[in-house]
Length: 160
Image: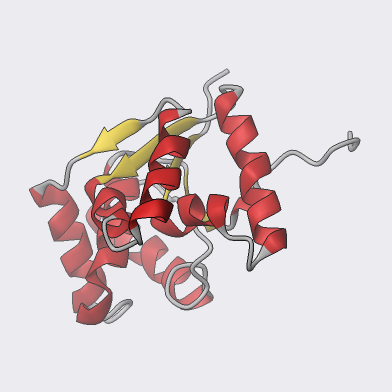
């Protein structure tokens, strides 16, 4: 059986080191264990690395150490990704101010990920964006892709 292809945006990785949001951190750490166990085929783009640079040095180092624990596919931003991001912007699904979010989505879609995981409720994990991505995928000929929070994916302990 094929492993699900998941794209992790920066908010997911940042919540590995987020004691101010203990529930999200716990769920993200559980997801991380599942990733380390090889349950998913993971994708991360240049945008994640660029956004890491905005963190204080000590947090950036901790997050980089977490990334070193897993195998992941690195996505370089291509013209197809930029085209997809531009379409999200043109259709006003996300504005110019949120081009990084458009590039995250474009990266996940153009690399055929099954889902994008995010803790970003303001721009990513919201009905307008999810429905807009479905529309753009249909318009541009890409398969449907889900946008979820990590806790929607993690295996529940003790459940059948």
